[in-house]
Length: 286
Ligand code: NAP
Image 1 (cartoon, rainbow, N blue to C red):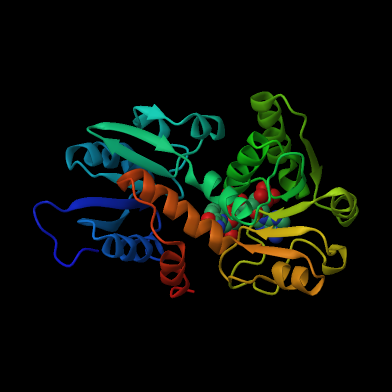
Image 2: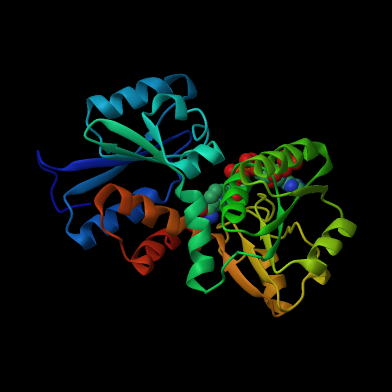
């Protein structure tokens, strides 16, 4: 946040429900201050029935940018004027830019997931990826990986296997590339991991307070594989601890979280904020 709010201060924010526990105001306000930008970021609790009014409010109040979180990432789309092609393919938006009254939706969850891989010089093209989960995060992850040329298998528990099959079908349609969906069993995991270069956990398994849970048995992990957990609380999940013990390379969901923020900030302001500063602010919350 800038030192003092004035008549010129631009407003950005988050809409979702709930929003009390979000780290985004801390991350963005620290970055605005660091960059000397006269902006402020606030969290707005918006109930599902009020989403349309909230977006009208964004126009009326000339709010410069919004992040969008659960439960609005899909339903916000009809209220926007334009969609970035990747967000359109994914069918979900987490960032809105207000450009002189024209609202454009982006998905920086997807590009934020990609960035920690690219930073480590891991290019998804041609890599085999075992993706566990088929919910909202898995959707963003699977589309960006498919767009970057990875070979995907989506693994989800039996109860909701249809979700995984549906996601696989959508990706096949969007990218003309066959994607398999399979049930989350030890046997299927073992088979997928034998071939995989990258394992991604996009389920909520292992998230606080269930820190002692993991979606993948430790003895299936091996060195040479990259294990990327989208869960960011705790920063080091049981899956990542097990992966480290197996001498696999690990990436924490905290990096994805920070990068989705960096990329949103950049879209609103044209400035790329420092990763370390935003990560330090996020970590204070955990
Ligand atoms: P979601 O849409 O509710 O999806 C949750 C996924 O987890 C589903 O595939 C679900 O399977 C699976 N799951 C839940 N409990 C399970 C269990 N006991 N065993 C096996 N699978 C289970 O949630 P989401 O929005 O995708 O979020 C998932 C995680 O990603 C959360 O921890 C969230 O905090 C994190 N996340 C991180 C970032 C980041 O920036 N790092 C961004 C977004 C989300 P079913 O389909 O069978 O229910």
